[in-house]
Image 1 (cartoon, rainbow, N blue to C red):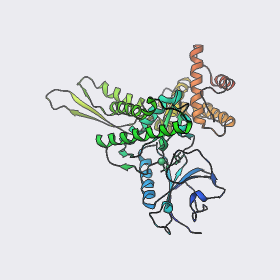
Image 2: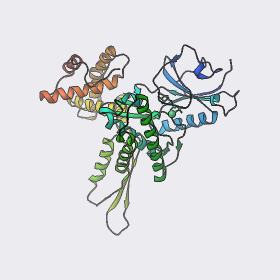
Image 3: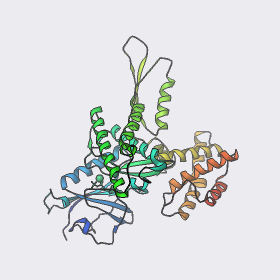
Image 4: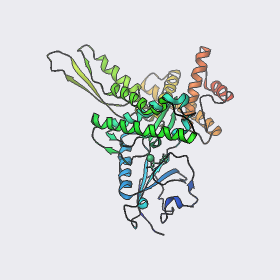
Length: 398
Ligand SMILES: Nc1ncnc2c1ncn2[C@@H]1O[C@H](COP(=O)(O)OP(=O)(O)O)[C@@H](O)[C@H]1O
Ligand SMILES: [Mg+2]
């Protein structure tokens, strides 16, 4: 059997047992699994290994190498792109043919394609969240210097992230990385997105035999509007007076609240003879809460989940009397051992397939609603029993 040239990132299988001598869509082997997928140009298959499921996409060698490199570089800059696992080159084939290269990515777990959000031609109750997530992804990529060039409904996957939805980029074939993007490049990317999204919505309507209303065809424009308001909020410079230092902390807190890291704060004299200064902020990835949670507890969660779990930690820290720095460290360990882990274990036992951190976030939400209704704190055991009896509201383990 022909063996291709392969670049594999550490922590992944060798993929040598796959039938590289044949086109991927002719593979019969036992590793192949069926997964939901969006509309696509290139052949894509999914394979399961003990460490997880992978997506394999065949494409010409040069395009495969480019996509692999893009995903590798993006993985250092954001957490919202599919993780590359390997690059494959079938060097016995003409490098321009479709099957001469392949990119292997880690399957994005607990995510779903946009079609699953579509209810009756629109996006139902999730519409706002889905559009915000889509716009937020583009903002984050643009902040990282990534021009996408093919942003579309099919090239994004969605994942529940605590009470909201997070979007993940899966197709980076046309992406280009720069140190920063000009506003012309950003506008061009938005125009491509609007065009693609309108096409995607028209496909959905045709498939389901529905008439589209105007708002659905203008979905892309709606995403652009949300994109612009978030972009402005993140990048607009402020002018502050000498007695307004508090506004620096206020701005950083607001950005952190949106989940964005703040890399640098720059204060620059206005040079107009006044004592006012310009305040500009270099915004990093949307990982503020997930980094904090990982640093404090070692738990890896998505951004929105991390924010809710941190709130649970500080609630218990208070209860466990974590006042001093040592007290806080002890309270964190106590929380993990006596609150967090037992609950996660209970959730895993009941829903082994589901994302336990998402369930934890939904449970926290339920506990909060109970406490508000009761007018006092509800302890975890009581809240969990009530949550279970009510059929896990807020949580969709499918
Ligand atoms: N890593 C992944 N995790 C989950 N689904 C994936 C992954 N990679 C691809 N897919 C699914 O396969 C489809 C096609 O992949 P994509 O990279 O967009 O191929 P193409 O370049 O042919 O458009 C996507 O719409 C998505 O549903
Ligand atoms: Mg695609």
